[in-house]
Image (tube, rainbow, N blue to C red; front, side):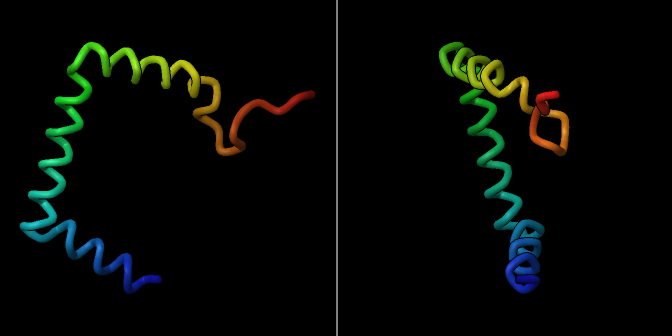
Length: 62
C-alpha cells in the first residue's frame, strides 16, 4: 500500500500533478460561483450539517 501512496505523492508534487490540481481547483471554484450550484451546495451542507465535527459520527441517544 505504501507504494501506491508514494506514487501518488510523487505525482502530486510533479509539474503534471500540479497542473492537474490547479485545473481541478479552478473548475471547482467556477462551479461554486454559479448561483444554481451554490444553492445545491447549501442544501447538501444543511442536510449534512448535524453530522460533522465529532469522530463518533453524530449524536448518541441517551
